[in-house]
Amino acid sequence: MNSPNEAAELDAIDQRMLEALARNARISLKELAEAAALSSPSAAERLRRLEERGIIEAFTVDIAPAAIGYPLQAIVRIRPLPGQLHVVQRLIQDTPEFIECDKVTGDDCFIGRLVVRSMAELDGILDKITERAETNTSMIKATPVKRRLPPLSR
Image 1: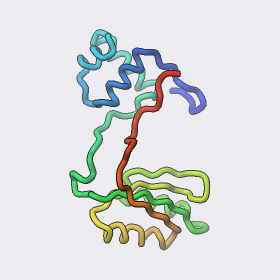
Image 2: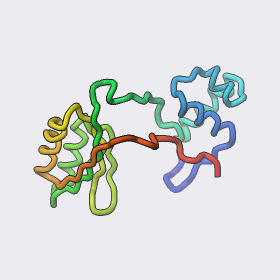
Image 3: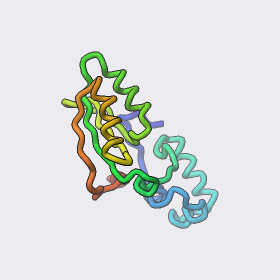
Image 4: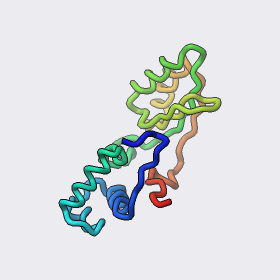
């Protein structure tokens, strides 16, 4: 596995495989091999090496929150009160509506993304956090850039 400061070298075949997987993580090995212009055994070996090198961390699915009953999304900046950092982190981790959260530098300690069914549900979640932290919430209107691969070529 590469250290955080050591960038992995990706050749054109690795790049084609990663791009195909980013479009559809459920792509068949045969289709992945075709996209990379490889035989199925060669594609399987490349895939295994990408996982071993820590380049591929997981194969996942992208779910539309609104389609499963969560029409509202918010970004919440969170600044724990003195001595409350670990308590707030655990609270965020234990709140399933937080679908993503980063620990960051700057004025805030955490920036979280959460999904909720209503403004009342959002208020309930924030009420639990504001006992131990200051928050600043922004409702998401649209996502013009969804999570995507970084540039793969140098």
